[in-house]
Image 1 (cartoon, rainbow, N blue to C red):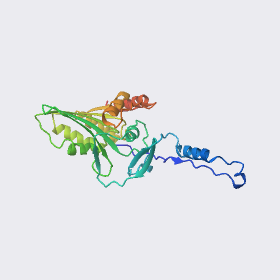
Image 2: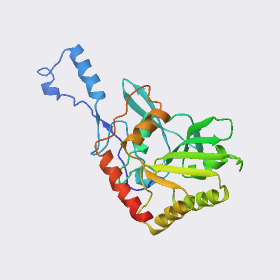
Image 3: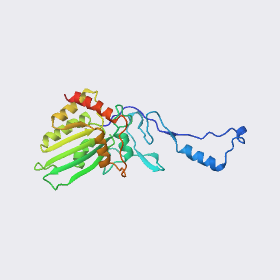
Image 4: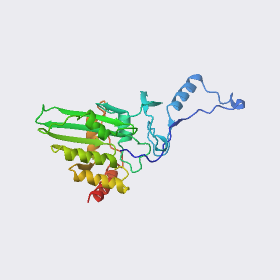
Length: 266
């Protein structure tokens, strides 16, 4: 599940300072130039330290209302979306904005209180078709990991061999780890591999015990390295043929989490 720590600030727009009345004559600017300056000022949002253009974390780790991003001249405009409870969003490709924010492998993930789960399902011995898509939860009901087995794989045929691969924004929470371990023990021919961008509450003994139980049930747990982020971008994101460039500390953060995961599973 996604981390629920921290807060974020919404970018503010600069306002053009009006000249004092007594200096109005001396500072008068031709109308075409004033229009250009005003347009330029409106296109430059003031960003909080550590934020990137277009990012809007949820405040105080509360349930995120969601945001709709509409691009006009490369600018994101956000409007709150009232999502109903127990909402699970299912789709083919993720918005590039949400991918870059939700999958960022930072240690303290302010406002990232959702789980994005990208999946590949290969049923060997079946029709040979590989299912691909993503699920997104709102943390108000069923989590994405559990919803996967209701929406994507509601049926199980023991005569088939299933290879399931997930790329998730954060590793499963303790409760989901227990449920996934039960499913894997019951479905002997299902092999699950989970690549996580971050580890959910890795300091907590309960979270560590959940990951150990999941690994003991046969699940392969991996951290996402830069090449995995590139693959996820190419496969599950509406990238419009844009090349993904991993953020500067992507590899360093991967090594950090990889060490934490190795310590937990030893």
